[in-house]
Structures are given as structure tokens and as C-alpha cells.
Length: 117
Image (cartoon, rainbow, N blue to C red):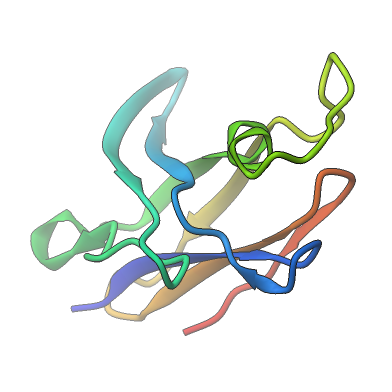
């Protein structure tokens, strides 16, 4: 079976994004259900996979990162409202037997992602 993991990289400070709240939602038709919530560790990763085993299923998902709260806690001066606040990445899992790694590379002004393994 595959697994789903994530990683937050703070490119403003050139370090892992430690202490970022991450929420995983499964989208099913019009319903949005919280699957798991976690906070990134000192390496910017969740300590356990977000999905694995029988929970790893094909479908549509969203990862929501509390990036604005993270930068505020780092003492970064942010405008109100924040330009980058909650980052939502909508993605699909087509093959539950594969690994999906969905990292967030973020600053207070931009973000990007890619599919890793």
C-alpha cells in the first residue's frame, strides 16, 4: 500500500516550517470531511503519514496549511489581511498503492508545490 506525506519549507528563512498546522480533507461529491489534522515537527514534516494502509484510497483531497499563523508566530511583519494565509492544495490520488508526497514551499508572498514520492 502507498502513503501520503507532506513537508513545509520556509524559503524566506531557508529552513523547515516547524509548527505549521496541517489539515487533510477528503472530497466526496459535495461533501468535505476532515480526515486528519497534525502539526509539522522540527524538520517541517508530519511525524506520521497523513494516509496509509486501508485509509489510503483513491479520490480527491485537500491539504490546508496555516501558513499565515506560522509566519506570524515567527515574528514576520504581515499586512492585514494577510496575502498568504491558509494555503489550500487540492489534489487527487489515482493509485492508492503509490506514495504521494505533497510538499509546500512557502513565503508570506508566494507558495508552490509538486508531487514527490
